[in-house]
Length: 317
Image 1 (cartoon, rainbow, N blue to C red):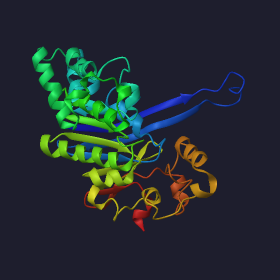
Image 2: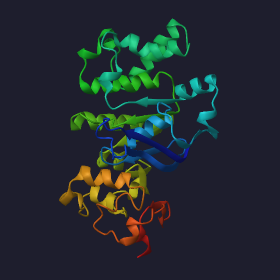
Image 3: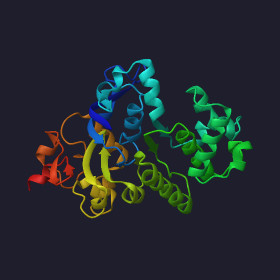
């Protein structure tokens, strides 16, 4: 359904005019040569710490950010070549649920207007048909119809997150990209949201890309998991093997299996250095098992086992 090939996106952090003298501008490779594909009906997880490039990758797929190079293909066609009508259809079929639901819900509107707006934009249905679609979407996310006359401020955090999901579902999408869907929610509500995603996947065969740093959520939901660090995918593994068969030192660090030089040198400094040098493995500066070639050559994703890939020279051992 979705194929990402060699995707790149860099941002330039410019110094002020005085600091710029003798110092080049700072380049952040937010997405660096990322490739993967998502099958219809699959739940594809993207894991990693904050700053690893997950959200930028999601926004680039949604065409909210233009890539510097690479290709995002939807149903076999390059999204960048879409006509205006094709792009409108793409944005209807590929929906997003963003991390900060509060900022995406207009506090001046009642829920009925918030949920009806996407249908009006895409010229879908009569008044009665739109009411039926909204009612169905609320039922799917387990919210009562009586909430439609309320404003977002009158709802709990979990309810607002469900409203954001319902707004995506009213357009009957084929793919939803959910960015940190459980962040800021208490454990009980988080579990309910995750169960809701599983239910939608099973009942509607809805394809999902779940972007999160919550490893428990990733392991619980995903058919496959891509682990990102420094803008790159460093490991790609089946969800059922994620907790028991991870190989890359960074994945094992996230899971608490191994240590990291981050613990000694500080996460931010090492992370920034790894991302900007452009040479060697992005994790080399923090990896406790790094050797000389790790600082000189960029490792490619290579098979560890069937369906399991890692970008690490340790595979050769």
